[in-house]
Amino acid sequence: MKYLFTGVLLTLFATLLPSSALAMDGSHDAVSMERAVVLDIYVSSAEKEHHVPSALESFLVADQLANYTEEESIYKLKLLTGDQSGEEIEIYHNSGLQNLTIHPEVGDTVSVYVDTNEGVQIYSIQDYFHLPAMFWFALIVFVLIARFGGWQGVRGIGALILSLSFIFYVLVPAISSGVNPLFITFGGLFLVALVNITFILGFNKKSLIAVLGTMFGMGASAIAMNILGYFAHLNALTTEDLRRLMVYAPNLDLTSILYAGILIGAIGAVIDVAVSITAAIDEVRKQNPDISRKEIVQSGMKVGRDIIGAMVDTLVYAYTGSAFALILLFAATQNIDLVEILNLGYVANELARALIGAFALVLTIPATAYIAGFIETYTDIDFKDSNQNK
Image (cartoon, rainbow, N blue to C red; front, side, top):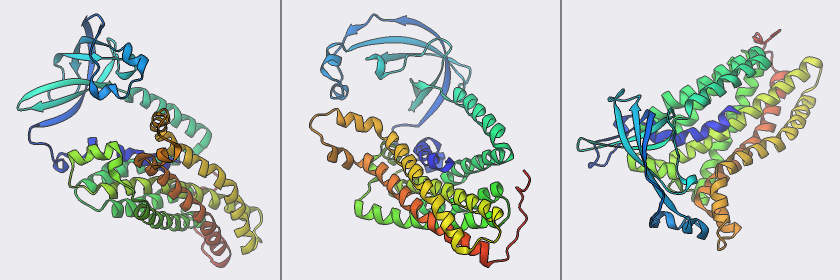
């Protein structure tokens, strides 16, 4: 499922773009995100009632408006990154409702937004620094994968690293420099899938079948994406991250970037299904070397039917989950019905991701089964199985 979730990584695009790709407003010299550790919180005013900002008022219900308070603390921070690493600064950090802002404590590491305007630097605390905990949890997951998955699990980790490396070190810089997002995404991910499948399954019939099945599914998802995008009028400007990207890199094709993200998610489902069906058919073939082409196809289709339900649910849950808070927000408004909620641009984009993934998934199953039936019975290909006895 590694590709399924890498689609959301494109939302980090704005922070990963090289400076040459950014078209900044002339009133700002530079903006950056730095890390800092909280040294002290030595001044904190008593909570007082304040006028609620108009931008916030529309999001608060009656009891929240009545109890709205604002407190202001002075945070002493030590910068850990950037040109001023090691320096200590003092900044104000305002908070209203307890659940609308963060409340760092002494010793916490935070992300600090730095806005340099005509030589003057303005700092503000944006968020906690989440990555250390993420790193250690990821390490635990990798150890479990290696422990229970054996050599295949280790190969899977290597394939995941390769996939992420492609996204951050090839895909993002290429799109930033003006390369067509759909072209580089489709072509690049197919090459990565080719390498990953061969690396995981070995250089054999099994990998050839999985690669060809993946190629068919990728083509189906690309065609479906363009057709649905055209008739449904999918709009990149309904996504907050893409709107922000438009400010910093207005020359990029945001619609193509939206389609590229959808394609990445669909490719994940395609690869998972192609590999699963190929592995099942290969095992059936080993247990019954005299099995006919028709029986191979039937076996692949039976496995595919079992996969469809679980995989479609996975796609729908994954993409609905990413829009769940927004759905709840609008559902809490009495004047908006379900049809209007589903028609919201951001929700429609997530539905398109799930639909395109499901479409490619369903077509990949028979394609992989028929390809397997042909290669297993009508060819003499016999590559060395690098996974044998492992």
